[in-house]
Image 1: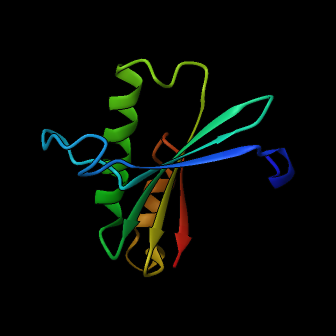
Image 2: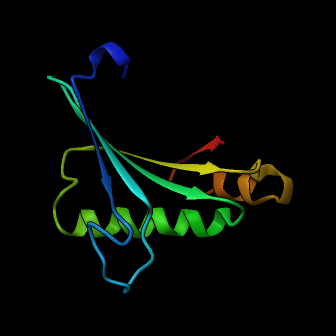
Image 3: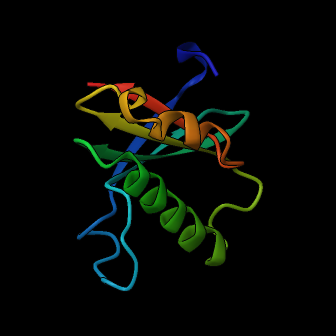
Length: 107
């Protein structure tokens, strides 16, 4: 995906707004990038330190959307925006062995 391919971007606040149920912890935002050829859903969690919890929150949210049929034939990406570098305690290395791919973004 290149910036020139994006024709529209939607930002949706998930936790506490889109789905206010407290049954599962959810990620903070969903960005939907659309172009004439594809649609990409990027689930974003803003985190200070608890990277493992962020991975769980993104997983819960993706499962919620998947179970409701929203993600059929969609490209899905998870991203964590962290205020610290997660590799200090091994969480990053452990998450890389997780079959769900998560992108880390240092704030």
